[in-house]
Length: 328
Image (cartoon, rainbow, N blue to C red; front, top):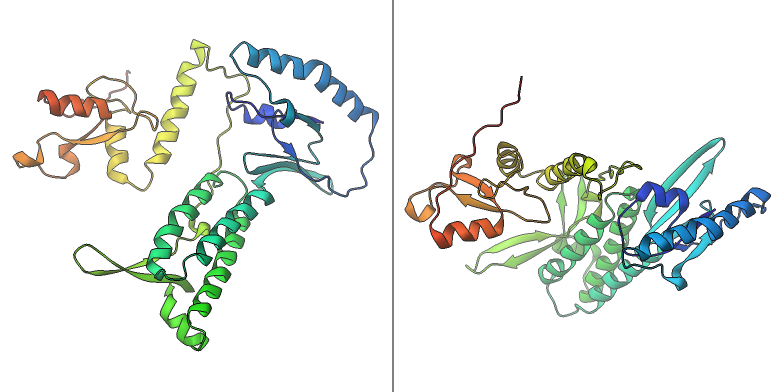
């Protein structure tokens, strides 16, 4: 059994999965499952003991459970929360637990994409791609930490079908081979990449291709340890380490940024405070470019945005941090 609800607070993913402290129930699978005494006891425990404790915990922090979204549901039935379905599956003697993009979320996303495609009858392929790419990338990035690989491929296929119908409506008297040659090109082994030509400010033409949701790599989320408490000073190093790992993942693919961040041990050389995704960062030229400085890594350092503004407004000089040495 699970208590599912919605509230604003810390993300205790594993604990909330086991006790189901959020979400809306999805339709009950037809497994011929009968209510047992154990299920009734679990429901009673959640209603009379777990739920009051959660309400008290949130009340002390100025929060509360949403009554209309708080229900009791079985984990085999699953529940939806923030566009994702949390559910346990049984395969023979094995039990598997999956978090997947919810069907409702996928349908709503595709409905929005199809509507945008239908409204672009007078636009060029490049203009349509420029509008669709941020939407597809943002949606896929949101679901990249859960079981989404097959869903991403299904979404790409559904978008392709909508674009193919869009292209055929624009050229009703043209053969399919002509339409394919005009709007689709080959990239690697994929012969059906929707492509347009975008005119840049200088008058030059540049090819722009539709972003594929399946090109997003799945990144498994590292669960927070159940006993970890962000309000306990003893756990400060643990949460700082999690921030460092998240920072490194954010900078992946930008090797020079990652090099600078590690070289500085994740600290801003001006204020000696952590540089995180939340604080943001700016790349500063030690020798200003206006004074002949280069764009090479040796002439750059990562700073907080406010520290960067302070350096430029007050003319403060900053140098490379000293290498971090470990104690023997």
